[in-house]
Image 1: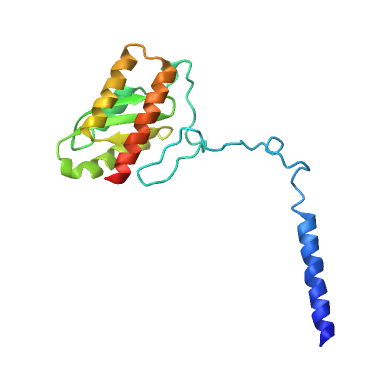
Image 2: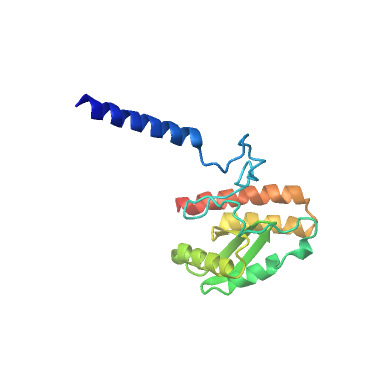
Length: 180
């Protein structure tokens, strides 16, 4: 009876040692991220939480747009606002954008359908221009803050300050959409 237990225990120990000692065989010796061509931080620092509570990673589907020449964008903020206004229930919309994020403030007809209209606007924008992260709100206060950022952009607002303002507003919109 002792012989089969010793034999099976030896086999288990030997096979575990081989598996742990052998590894996969394809990894470099130093295991650095540089050698494996992996980004140290795969999530952008200004990632947002979407209305469904999920973080948005830097996943290649959202290709970065050149910051140096804003005319290279496929779309501008006025065109995005026009798309939002084409959704039934939206009276008017204002949009502000940077290279990755778009803030859209909505004036809607029926406040009772706010969530549904916000989701429809998000879907309409994502369908045509999926490379951006959209932050949609029908909140009056947030819409006015978007309008003030838009006015500063028209007056030649500094790009770094614009990105900070958009980041702060995007976080505020995302938090407010999760709460309500």
